[in-house]
Length: 327
Ligand code: AFP
Image (cartoon, rainbow, N blue to C red; front, side):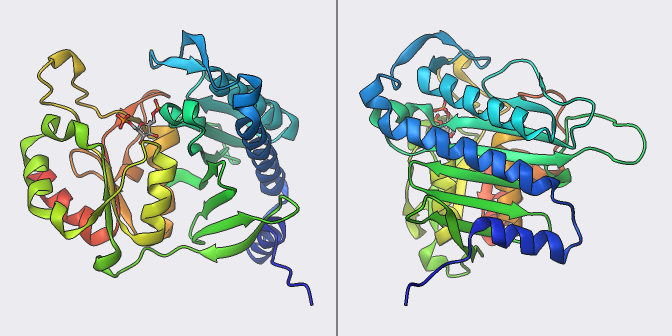
């Protein structure tokens, strides 16, 4: 007998019916999955086509844009537009908010279509991260810059590993794998491990002496208790934390010998990086805070590309460092 796994679409249909929801969200998810598959295909064959090199211009963060970033952006905007369900989108690759279906759209989508670009020239894992908020259906629309606690869903594809993780508001974080037909199948509920022996720590060790002193001290006192892993792509690093527990952190840079390199507000982008993983983490039983110990999901963005420091993972570990940060 052939063993068939439940597909993502059947899983989502069950979820929507159980909660008496519309089919619009399915259409949006179908668009995001089509985009991710399309990007993954380009990524797998990119080196052959010369798509993994530098394109020669810079993005809104002042970083080099790889051709693969541009391709991923174009693909994603195409599918979001075709879905007809998106009001407008905010992307790492576009300085301006991207208007899509401003009249009849139903959702706001915040995304980074290719996160972890230093991995691109090596063909190593990158992420496609997204958060989704819903239009205020009653009364006037007050704005598109939603805090993470107002997202209805958030997820990530780790490209090109064929994995997809989606968190649904109050309904858990679920991981899917690609089957032989390239469908995402086999929903597995992700709950952060309570076994501290499995926990991992993840941060860029090259920066550790530039962190605030209280953070450096916490690392000194705690790092030997855990395994250390760092890929340099938030989606890939957080993927491991979701499986094994522990903590990913990108603290504020405040003690760089070259003050121009300090990043007192952190490096990661709130709307399409930090809030996305914080949302997935919370639905998996974990938590996330910024440099002041404030929950990441409570941070109200003031502008689309706002940065934040991030500590995300198992609750006891994040709570422990939050106590130090609050001092
Ligand atoms: P890039 O896309 O510019 O490589 O940034 C990736 C990222 O935003 C996130 O995915 C990583 O966790 C983090 O930055 C890596 O930053 P460092 O290179 O400073 O460690």
